[in-house]
Image: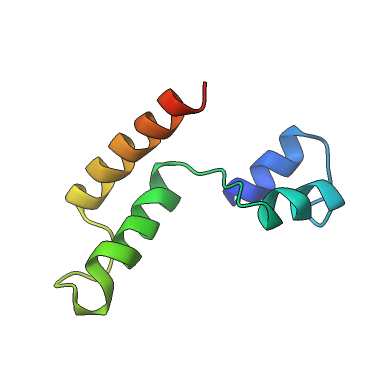
Length: 74
C-alpha cells in the first residue's frame, strides 16, 4: 500500500477525495523511509548512478531527511 493510500485510509477518505487532491496540489507530501530513499536516489544519483535501486547511503539520507522534516514541522 502506498503512503498516500495509507494516509487516505487513516483519514477515512477515498484516495481520490478532494482533501487528498488539495494536499497534493499544495505541496504536502507524506513519506516514509522507502519513498524518501527512492526520491533521494532519483534526485541525487540520477540516471548516471552506479546502482539501480536506493542503496544504504540513500536510506541513511532518507532517515536523516525525515528526522529533519519532523523536527521543523512540529
